[in-house]
Image: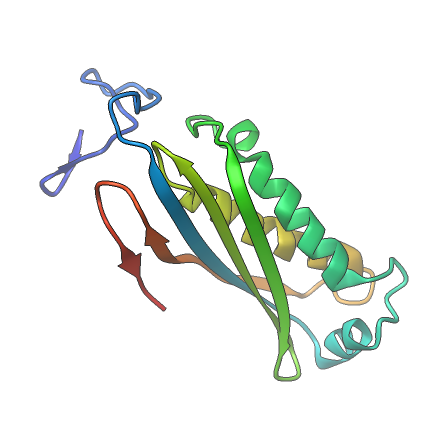
Length: 161
């Protein structure tokens, strides 16, 4: 299966799902950063900023959830390789009066990248924010989940906003 001139790597010659064999690739330092945003009512963000949510420290718990999620990515995404993660950083920053920006950066030394781990960390952190304050704001939206940077490996560096 191909897309343009590039071959999709998670399919075999018969078009069936397959885990990519990375045994022939060099081990290099690899890092990826993903971002997401959760938009909410201004009163909900005020509650989070004040530390008055009934379930506790929303941003602290979401940070920990994102870190834990990055470590479990291979259990969640069927064709991801389990990786020895060197570090995970998850930052949650209230912005304006109605949103929290989430940035997750994951690093490893290995044969495959950590984009999926960074995306998983950012998305689970956002889901955790939602879970912790959904009692006061069920209309929250998780938006703009994307990889914004990647380095290491044969394909080289990638950045976008």
